[in-house]
Length: 446
Image (spheres, rainbow, N blue to C red):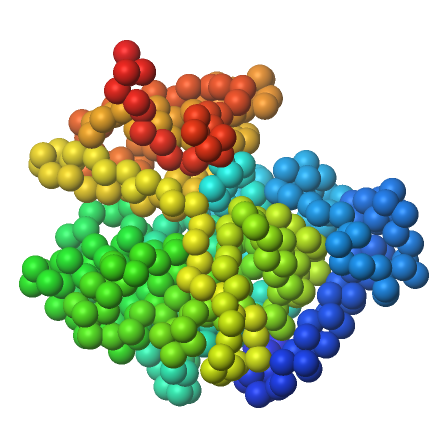
């Protein structure tokens, strides 16, 4: 962790908040063109892609953004070694690293942060940041709470025990200069609820953050008297919010809920607060093009693995910014895929849940895509796309080991599942769209 980069980025983020809208857009455009030029020179993938579309290095300065080709996760992962701009990062080595490493603070080759996700597409995605890339946008996390240069206790409830985006960002507060301002508690959402309650009661966090569904369940525990904490800040991250549940959470804890919008491809994309009446996108960190049913993301800081006009199937609704509290793009609360929470019956006969992001961030080397099909409260199918036939048995064994660990953590000893290798995953019959978690129709159950 570079203290100089962190401090400089923190100061810049505060300076940018006071800029005019016109200056922010000029800054964004400058960084966008700079990233285009960098990728053209350093990334074989982008160089070939742009030249094949008639875009020369000289044209990069003036080419209309709509004439720049769109990329997606499949393209980035299929061409990983040509996308990255440094020779010491290869897909094979990164996958080997993720296969053995469970500590989100462990760096690949002691130089690179790695995060992974399958997201709502079911396709495994891996994203690499240099230390400098990471430290350039890490200070933006302080936009979610009132940062006063005093040490706070921060608890995060989410997927842990791996290189997931949320836990990687949260646990990094224990390193470098940040350790003087934050004492983190990481709670693995795969563990039983009563364990979280006990740890939180002992820890008494100043900042409580996590997945929206997890925060709602903690609010229910607080209302029932099992949980007794009094945080000063509530932060949702990793999920869109539901207005009725948001009001319930806020009423229980007596605090407004801050909404942190981020993805593995750019861990902080926006911050929403009640006073904003929406979410401000961080236009100095990323260029987000809002389309009808998706967005196109250009990460303006990641020079290790450039993502330029990268498609993400979230959809945002722009809002008219009448108050203009910040000079950034204002959107309504994020609406992503409405994935299903997995409710199953544990060994005590009680219902407990597996969060959909645990599945979205499920990683096994050799597993290309995945989907969960819920059969009933005690069984499900795990559909796996495994491209290399010679690796099938080994990959299935690793999938079973990871699923067994997830189920054991929750006390789902009676839950049964099957791992089915398929060529393609199911899509919704009505919409034609893919869902990571689906419920088996009764008439189809055999």
